[in-house]
Image (cartoon, rainbow over all chains, first blue to last red; front, top):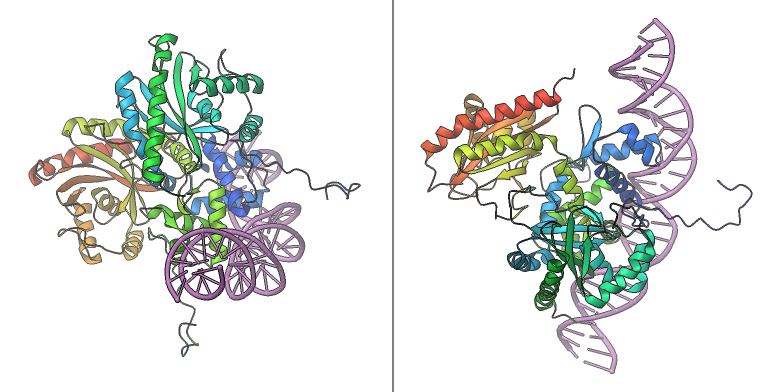
Length: 278
Length: 278
DNA sequence: AAATTGAGTTCCAAATAATGGAACATCAAT
DNA sequence: ATTGATGTTCCATTATTTGGAACTCAATTT
């Protein structure tokens, strides 16, 4: 026991939190294994056993078996130099996740349309905990590498899609997500306190549009609008993004209605194709 | 019991095999959960509880908990209509797997070069069990959807990359993989017996090139060459693919040396960038 | 309206697998 | 050769998974 003189105490809150701020409830052995996978996936270079040992709080023997199992299953790959990296079996799974995602499929023509209207890059993403995960993008120079953005996880509080998504959450959930954020000031404009963020969410709810005014990357601006489906239980958004030198705040403002319309059209389509239930 | 009059029989060989033909050794609880994930990922439409119950051989209660855990972890997503599909958390993992894949990064310029030389679609893939998983592709009309092929899993025995990869395996492994294949005759030209396949592997070893002569899809041909790294412990290949009406067998033949050269150049680059060990 | 079916969910004692401390192995550098 | 750092294996203890059965809920039939 950790508290020898304190037996009457309740079990401590046990707020196991992953990198993305999600509390992982008791998903047992699987959860622990996936947490290890997440550690490796979140690093931006291959990790060696000891590196992982330091950040996972698992005993050596346990961690070793978890890693072995993950490797055996193809979720991790173990290099000749004993470094672990994410395994290609995940590519297969992800290919299915992407191809089978109805939301993405329904949204696609609308993304293209919005791109045609604005000439700038269009993103589609969904909220997951306090991260936004990009599901699709349409941009002029298709030469840009595949996967360049799709699957990427970015913070909610400093991206257009993220803030748009937040604005669609009911207050209790919003509060919970905001509480889980660890703010980091990426640029001078980054909203870096819960209060600023909450205030901005209010404005977004009033206007129907979220903006990223160089809050994540200097020189990058965007307008976004929320997309959500009570019925299918998800919240996301779409955005038009471009370089500040080319896109004045006024121009951005003028696209706001286009983005809202696109979001509306997508929700309508979803209602039509998935709606007639209940 | 299934065999009431036959008690003395040994426990059956227990060849637990996944859809991809990999025997899953004892990866314990994780392995079972991932097997369930694989079932859902391999279906081409969302599955309901009972559907999964029928193909997984798990008892109801167990399966239910496994599914719940997978959903909780974001590896599966549970629709309002009780249908399970692959979760978007996998996109995040896959994005890392792809971006962090050194093999792919090293190969990329060579794929482009080969595309410039031939004007046709170039694929890069690796062997995984008896499937080939595509890691990258370069094609003319970049408008084709991302993820369209990347991450896709195809059979080894009727694809250029697959047969090229097989040709690079040592005989014992080759034998094991061939034994695990369940042949399916996709077209009239498909090699549908182990003997035919083994004979063809011999020819590939002699010539250094594998061909797909409309063996997987009618009207599609390709030339491929193996790429492997003893040091990094993987086997794959690259190929040039195109429609039969545009690509005569002679033209294909004339590209063979280009493909071999590209494969050679990639292996050389890998040796230079990863080699100096041991 | 009541009964029936089918689908999904919950429960808990028994069976099984995960845990984690410590010993062992391997390799590079002194 | 010796040391130190890193990775791997072992196994009694402990915690989790298992799986059969009972339960809930909604849709359909009688």
